[in-house]
Length: 417
Image 1 (spheres, helix red, strand yellow):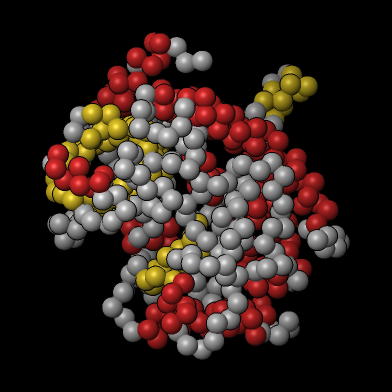
Image 2 (cartoon, rainbow, N blue to C red; image 1 turned 180 degrees about the vertical axis):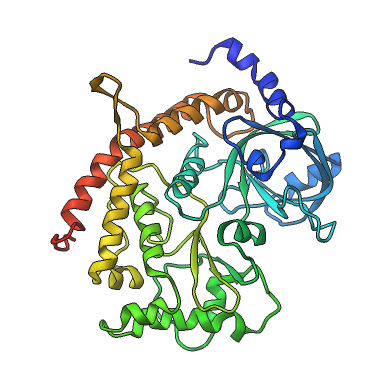
């Protein structure tokens, strides 16, 4: 139960969390820092805010000013974002810093998202998932909890999310001159070859950079990658596909998604979903970047082999002992984030592992802002139940991952389907 004092303090906490830091220390890392609930203020014309909420299914932009940590950015562009998360009461938002001011950035960012956690009562799943990816060395967006105010009125608890764009690419890969695509789910798809015509691949992958280039420049390497996944012989599979993507990197990403029970990722229940594809300039190699993880950290017994037989790339990669070993070893590496550790001098009372500690810390951090959020579609009890579900997953999942990994993917283990 949260105390009256805690609830009364939410306004003070959110008011002070940004202004207490020195302006000279402001960086994107500060903006996406999750050691405090960041306060962001948006100032929007009342009529524009009314129409943004009324027409929440549209992608119309509206001008606004944004204040964070004592700095105000004028004339930013706001629009509603998301698919299933769209809401008139508590809209998820995209903030563009350069739409009305060409070339402008804020802390090196051209845009960011403000997610409303409409599909996650705890507000913790995506925050912890992206943090887990980064902890294991995988490129993933930074995130931070936010108390969002609109025209000085508290709207609710949000998550600020780093957009996957040129600024992200520069941070993650050291360059951003290549081709970035966002995967657009429309039906179940598992890397089946769709033929030599490029239109089917363009329907799957929407270009986010170099959008004016020809279909051939954009999609011939994508078509060639998927053709190699399907048509290469077993003997030439690794060499053929490695010309178009880094197979060990792919295996690491899908292993972490399996460990955290990501049911809506590259091997999820609906086929390919929720990722970006990046091909550096003058290169044929593609990188997979995870995005949107509101369905992870749920099912304690989510199978580690989910989607393996359906997905062409995964099915064939697991027949290669070296790639199967990458998958197995990454599962164990991820499981270590769940593992409880012996307390000092009290080995029979193990302390929470990294993920459980982070989940508990973030739950306690955001609880006052969550309780004060009158626009969210969940009760306080549902917030607590969702947070406890995440904590239970963090406590128990590691043992399941180790057991399943040993029986299915350890050296010498045969397939069990």
